[in-house]
Image 1 (cartoon, rainbow, N blue to C red):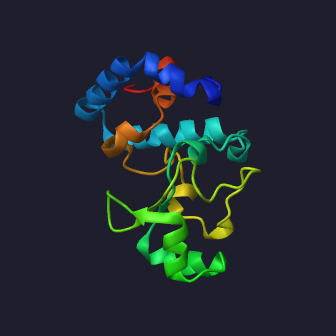
Image 2 (cartoon, rainbow, N blue to C red):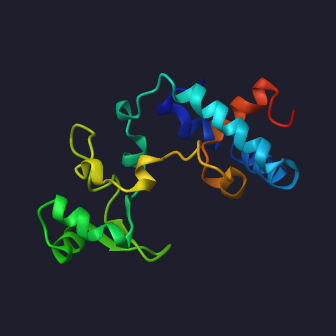
Image 3 (cartoon, helix red, strand yellow):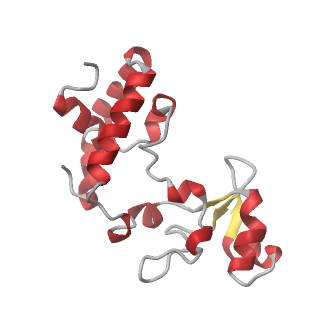
Length: 158
């Protein structure tokens, strides 16, 4: 398996191959079978992996805060909704919610923990989404090494 700190560089090396593979899957793979295989691989790969050890998702992406979470998150941080938005967020260009102003995520502490604690958004709790259904519709957001693991095992289209 590829070490987490090497995923980005390895993915860049195989960018064309990964795009061709994802395109092939979109037109040829059975969605239910693919979801089952992702679920199996996710359980296997994350059984012994503690995400808090790397926090690359927090380091490499902006956090995304749904509009419905603003009041709760602001209260948790001891701020008014307006103060919370002004201090940490910008309107999302991809929907009705908000994004953190910066990368790495503004809510990541020096020790790697999330300042929002249990209030962190579902999108953060479920990242990298590889155990979520309907993977076929979002293949461009899935880590490329997941595909290499499936093809290496010969299971992907089996």
